[in-house]
Length: 234
View 1 (cartoon, helix red, strand yellow):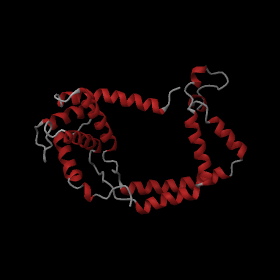
View 2 (tube, helix red, strand yellow; view 1 turned 45 degrees about the vertical axis):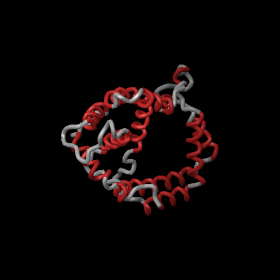
View 3 (cartoon, one colour; view 1 turned 90 degrees about the vertical axis):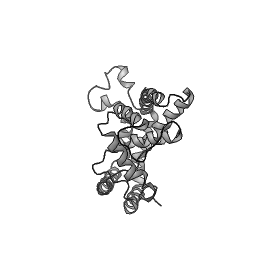
View 4 (cartoon, helix red, strand yellow; view 1 turned 90 degrees about the horizontal axis):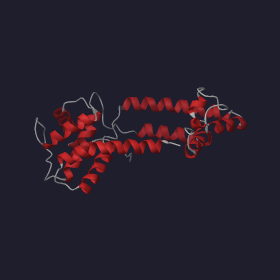
């Protein structure tokens, strides 16, 4: 039975195998084991890069709607008979193909049931129902508290955040080996880091000007990171 963790690991391994030859090419004098560590480091930094990039007003609107929807859901759940709710929980074990009516649960082939959610996934879903009933007030107040304390974050605007994430990860990798990959204050069409970014942008299908992406990231993020209003909330 495949689960989301298996899919994540497969996707991670695929990306690792794609990034590895690029870093090998641009850090040719580094031994294989260090390259492997460098690839893991690059992927980790890219995953976390610009984590606090959001549109403040949009996030406030989303949180407001979420509060209203969760309050309504909690009220509805509290009115459902415990036996009926138990049946909902039991049906969580069925694969999506059965739940959406594609297959009849009584006649579908066994391989369909191999795509059913794992025990852990079903248990989490059950806890959502039970937690929303018993913990609704705390959830509502937690969301409201987050709204009141929400930092401005990194304003996204029309900026290519995906490009900036790759830039940040490539820069952090380069800063580990400054004797092999210099990080310029401004990018102007040449240099080893630019050549690395060209290959990485191509891998991630990022349609952006490399110089503009680097210079924008350097100006708005790298030089101002300490002054940005970011998480964690104090």
